[in-house]
Image (cartoon, rainbow, N blue to C red; front, side, top):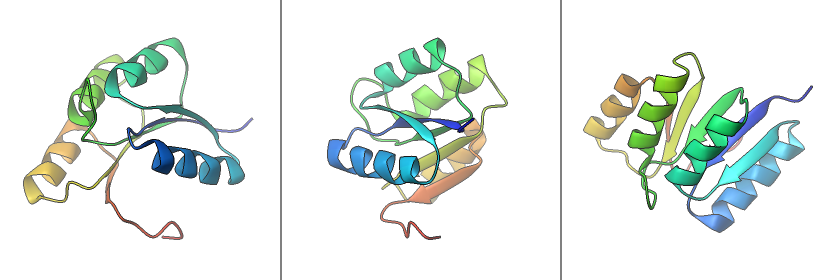
Length: 109
């Protein structure tokens, strides 16, 4: 069974590209374009990993991730964002991120 990933990324083209890349690497990906859709999808489905952007409409990634962790504190969580300020990185890890990846990034790394 393929691992299931919740990808919450508001930039449509980048989200679709990342979804296709992950699908090619044997993951099942649910892509949501804002934090509200992401929370709804998380509540309605079981996921093995969440990949979340920070700057999104309707609900930012920090808020979404806090809500996700309140539902399941053990879900692996990766922030994938352009926000690279030290305070943002620290906030991400404080929320419970397993990793904090800054865009742009090398897909092979």
